[in-house]
Length: 352
Image (cartoon, rainbow, N blue to C red):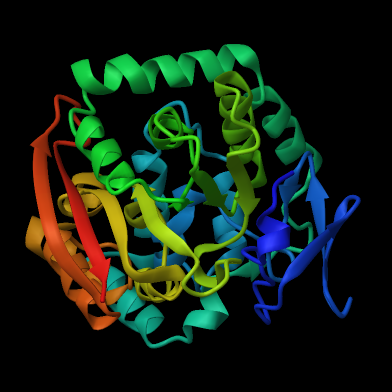
């Protein structure tokens, strides 16, 4: 796959011991830990952890009702807005604004380790997940994603994209770690500009999302330079001080436990390394349609996100970064034409 194994960059997410590849397995040198490699994607998750980026706010609100969360996700049609189903469930279980605030305050007092990862027993490689990986690992899908990143990102809703790519590649980094592969849009934009001497790891907890990165790597003929890693953000499987750049294209505001994620980003960055982040300028742009029916204002919505350790807004992100040794240096705001995204901020934080 790549000399990441030889250089000791990939490590155990549990003990941070160096990993070596032997066939379809990764082992620590003492063979006390073993992780599978599926379709050239290392599965470096703790236990049977799995997650869905759609769930972050619902799992915070309804963590007392895990069986109800499972029931909810059998009913959602992700081709449409799920807000109506969300609102129905919240109304049935938490009743009103006071119930929502109480649930979030209660969640905020829980142990991070207890709630950020739920072992569903099946692990990340169910038949449906593998089938989704194969669907995304196609030439047609890769061509469309790369074309969108090259053209639509500049001309349409993602006016921030050229600045994001420029900031990621500034100073010719040797190693880049992307936080959240997702649909592959941000991955394609950054990977399309990789220099010959640069290697990019792209991290997502969802194995199916790596179908996007594998297909993009094949399409751009950089399979030895764009390396998918199935892992969670709270236990990044990279050697400390190994990355020149960590970048994220809406990864932070579509995940949970921002503090833990930022601590890991600071750990894996070299001194002087940069964290380049794209996020909605405040959380209400994504969550307001869920909270507004219960009488929350924009300011209250952003405040609730902070209490729940979710992404609040650009200002609170910069404050959190400072607490973890990541100093804000540059920030650029863009007004998109998309109805949901509205204001987007591209930020640069430097590890001192």
